Every structure is written in structure tokens, then in C-alpha cells.
Image (cartoon, rainbow, N blue to C red):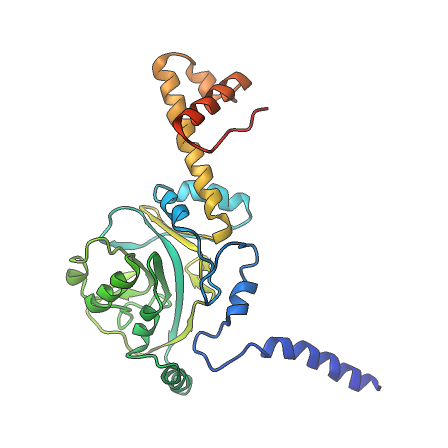
Amino acid sequence: MTKTAILALQITCLIVPLSAPVSAQLDLFSKEQRIEFTPEWQGDRFPDGRPNVPDAVLARLKDVTADEAWDVLQDAGYKNQFEGGWKVINPSQRLVGRVVTAVFMPRRPDVDSVIRANGKKENRIGDENSWIIDILKPGDVLVVDLFGKIRYGTIIGDNLATAIYAKSHNGLIVNGAIRDVTGIREIPGFQCYVRGVDPSALENVMLTGINVPIRIGDATVMPGDIAIGDPEGVTFVPPQLAEKVADDTEMDHLVDEWGHMMLREGKYTPGQIDDKWTKPMIEQFNAWLEKKGSKLRMPVP
């Protein structure tokens, strides 16, 4: 075999694996690719490959702040998972849910014609911003990259907001805008993290991906991440770190609770509580955890 033929064979071998998963589907990522790009998640998955963090873990993340999640993510090497600077509609309890992603781009007619044709083949109904609502499940948070567009960048009004909440019982995060805020405020529990509001309708954009990696400001977001909203902003926790964030946060709260109790009872001084705990202190703390019914334990030196 000549050197040219060998080179051609090598190039073919490289191209085929990359092109094989491509199909006419709108979402662009196959189930296999969603699994491939979330390799550290070993738990349950939705039929399309999106990680499915258990409801019990989501419930434990309700009290997590951005600061508490930040420490765990930084230690694990995830430096780009927080985004602030939001306008929050219907602020109430913490927004927590499994991420469904969508990405829009400025409309290009030839590309959009293919997207609409593929959507028709897949029996998608209505405008493109309604397609992403149809796949939502309870506990999901729809996260949309609308490239910061405000005028004519309103992803939903009150009708689609009602549809989102009916499907997910959760909220919306959009790097763009919404409209009909008066109507949206009448949907109890439906929180929206947005860049702005505007009375215009969504125009001159096209939907280029569903449940694919997206960028929200300085954060890289994957389908199946856990979005946690608080007064500081939104943290996107990789699914494999969700339980550790819950564990570490719960432990921090328990440490504070026990320490405050010891100070009130005069059993230890502020210096002892703030310093590294001794073995007897840790043993007393662990006994208190057991009595309290917590499964967490502090390692005994």
C-alpha cells in the first residue's frame, strides 16, 4: 500500500466515528453523545441520555447558597459554573432543578429552513420556542442561551410560561428576555432568571440545539446539570457533584448548629469552636449527629 493510500485510510478512520452519529434530528446530540459527554455520572438517565439526579438529592439542595456550592466546585476543578447579574421575576424559595438546555442563534434563512423542515418531520408543533417546552418533565429547569438578546428576544410570554410551569412545576433561566411580566407574576412558584424584559415578540432567531452544551455568560452548562438559583445568581452543578454539594452544605450547617449550641451551653469557648476540633469534640459531635438521625459523620483523626 502506498503512503498516499495509507494516509487516506487514516483520515477516513478519523472522520467516520465523528460523522456516524449525525442525523436529521434537530437536537444535534444523540443519546450516545449525551452519555459520552457526561462520563462521570454513573446514576440513572432519562431515555435521551440526560443525567437524572434523584429527587431526594434535589430536595437537599434547596438551602444551598452560591458560596457553599462554589467551594465544592472549585476544589473539583470546575471553575466556570456560576453566573450572576440576573433580573429575577417572582423571587421566592431557591430555584433548584435538572437542566434542559436550548440554544438560539440569529436567524439565517437557509439554515432555519432546514431546522423547520426537520421539526416538521419530527412532528414538532408551533413556533420553535414552543418545541423546547414539549420535552420538559417535572423537576426540570429550562435554560436557554438567547445570546443576551432583549428587544425581539423574549423567549416566552404568559401563555408559554404557564405551559412551562404545567410541565415542569419549576422555573426558567434565559440569557435573553421575557414579556407579559404582569401575567407571569400571577403564576405562583414560577421563577424566571432573565437579562431583561420587553413588550416585543420573539423574532429573527432560530433554534439550533436542544439538550446540547450551551454557554450562559461565563458558565458552561450541560443537559442534566443541576441549576441552583439564589440571591447572588445561578450555579450550574455537574450531576456527579450534586450529592457532594448537598453533603458538604448539610455538614457545614450541622457544624454551625452544634457549635452554636456548645457556645450557648458554655461547654466550649469561641476559640475552641473556631479552632481545629479535638478528637473528643469530634466524637461528641458525631454522637450528636447520630442522635439527630443524620447519616453524616465527621472523620475522627
